[in-house]
Image (cartoon, rainbow, N blue to C red; front, side):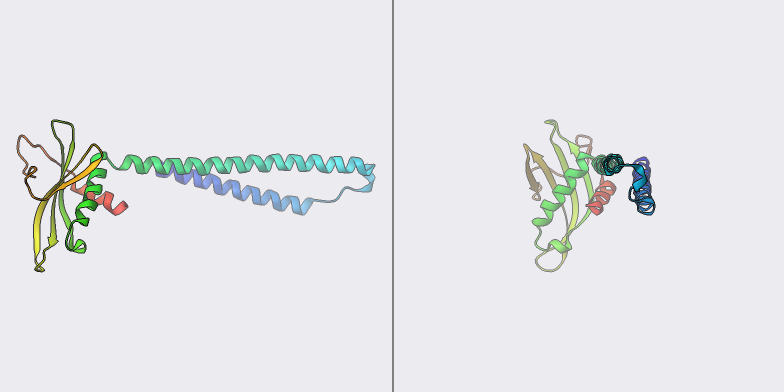
Length: 187
């Protein structure tokens, strides 16, 4: 919520600066008059005009730098919000669901019902999915699968040989279904 307020304030400030810049340009157009012959020689008039031009150019460069800075800050804050909004376990679950979906006979019928996560003794994060998917006969099967990323390589086990999704005292899984579905919608 705070970052959204900060982003809104930065956008409002950028709009205010754009409006001020537009008003200054309009004022310059309305009040610009060529140097009068009473100023003196044409050389003095030229110097006076070029000093004004240099001043305006410096102000314009300053405004452009402020606008660019505000755009960069807005982008960085947006990236920071997105990076902090998804925990690593949830990000792994989203990646695992994509791999698991690719293995389905009918990927369009693939529905994830529950997502659990845990870390084993070796420190490897394990994600367990309970899902439904259409089988070869047109019926819906309810299955479970384990997903791990060990040494950067994804592995999906749907056979149940590599372990089970059963929650026991030895395997205290943490349910992340709600966070998973939110992250999947945001993707």
